Image 1 (tube, rainbow, N blue to C red):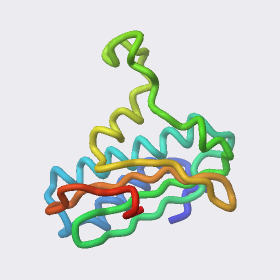
Image 2: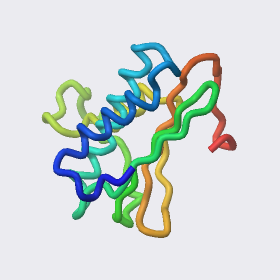
Image 3: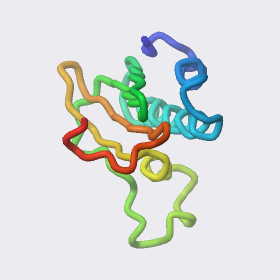
Image 4: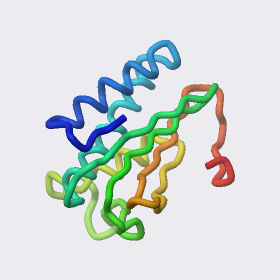
Length: 136
């Protein structure tokens, strides 16, 4: 789904996730996936020059894979803010997004693409006990 020309890409992403996962997972898991997609799109808006370019959602029997692409080439710097110095609850208003993604996803990672990078989150839809890195 193209997000590059959208005025409100977060709204489009949330609606798309709900539509794709309708009937595939419980309402609470769909809500989790919506929040993850929203965080990934918001991060692309805040931390890249041109924002998100597209979002892909692949649904398998027990998982959904959400990818948000952008033109940034800084895949190595995408990581949650370090909470070692202070609890995450004491962080400024921003900086919690990837902690939310990490908490709600079976796994997440960043991969370089031909046109930039993709931040990928794997959401359990039910029945999967563990997701190994080889599954990506």
